[in-house]
Image (tube, rainbow, N blue to C red; front, side, top):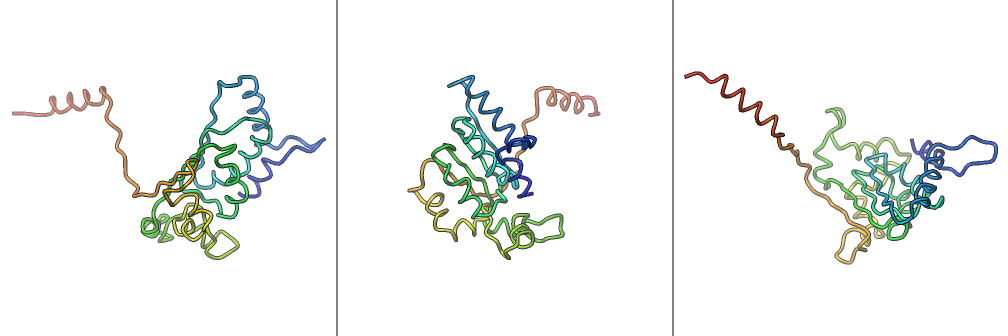
Length: 195
């Protein structure tokens, strides 16, 4: 997965077909340049999407896309080193705002992966899918707290305005029923009630 994300964003070599993400980055930059001041770019990455964006966003910026207004990372499965090497230098510069959504340590430990692995998927990535045992993963609260560069960015009142981190309990959000659904529910309840 990491290798494919990197290869997809590599600069094109003469005589070699375009790498997919680099091709998109180049076309995105051309589009933004044709419409100066009218385009606002936002990126969202969930889990391994953070790995993809760690290669794609620098490529888009190199191609001349202009600034990325915001980057939202949900439970980012990127290693801390990869984030610090590729994305962190862009935060506040080419990537104007970063918001990271994570669960706190206790919720990560209480989570499970299909009742097979008794912790969250990020713990599984950290403990089983990385070459280093207990590899620091950006989406794990304990990894953020253990890295002074990340603590300086995310965990204090002195945090740069470009970086925001939200860690809280996962809540099930129930959508409000539409007017048509409320009418159907009312119609069913009035037709099925008997005196």
